[in-house]
Length: 222
Ligand code: SAH
Ligand code: DHB
Ligand code: MG
Image (cartoon, rainbow, N blue to C red; front, top):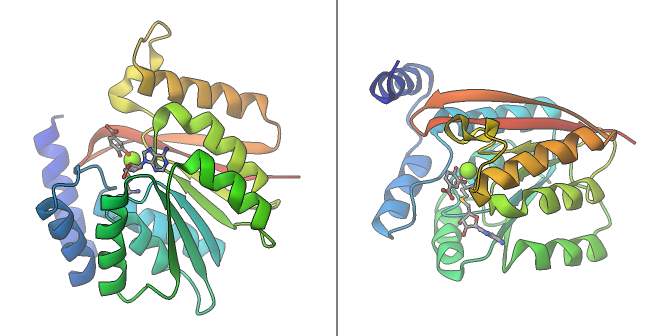
């Protein structure tokens, strides 16, 4: 099996499964035109995030890593009338592109972008927070994944869901001697999960438009 097949199957699945959503398609195009890296989740993954939020009935969602707002809009589309998404982005130019995209998709009333380093924003959110998040999607700097996860637990309630992107990285995570900071971040995250009894987790390998990778999903208990 090759990347070519994975791309063709992903294209087939998304054209047969979904009606075209012009707002979501626009975000991909606009992000490309603005020179943002093409590291947003794939459409099938975006829909999975949307479905997880829907099945769970999440009304307060936190995202770490906004980029152009593509996954943010998939998640926002799952929110009920009074639902809210807070999304964290360190690069002001990306956050500005995301703000335009989120506004265009009609979600600026439900989505708030916090511009700045997530490890600075997370303690502030924790300080200010009165209501825990129902779902947290972690997709920013992989070297900081264990710390994001630690904050995600602090910002959760029993039953909250945590999803983490890019947990397989072409299979590189099985190399215990890896010098890649990205890989080491994922490995440390997996160790952290195992040592944290409050997390019940699994990870799933995926192939598709974004190559060979995977995601972790966890439920927080008390
Ligand atoms: N979730 C997005 C993709 C996010 S890509 C989507 O699927 O559409 C990762 C993003 O995390 C990038 O925009 C990057 O600038 C941001 N990021 C990296 N380090 C960060 C940090 N320390 N704090 C906040 N955002 C960060
Ligand atoms: C990278 C980051 C991502 O969030 C992703 O989905 C793919 C690649 C990266 O930093 O290389
Ligand atoms: Mg990612």
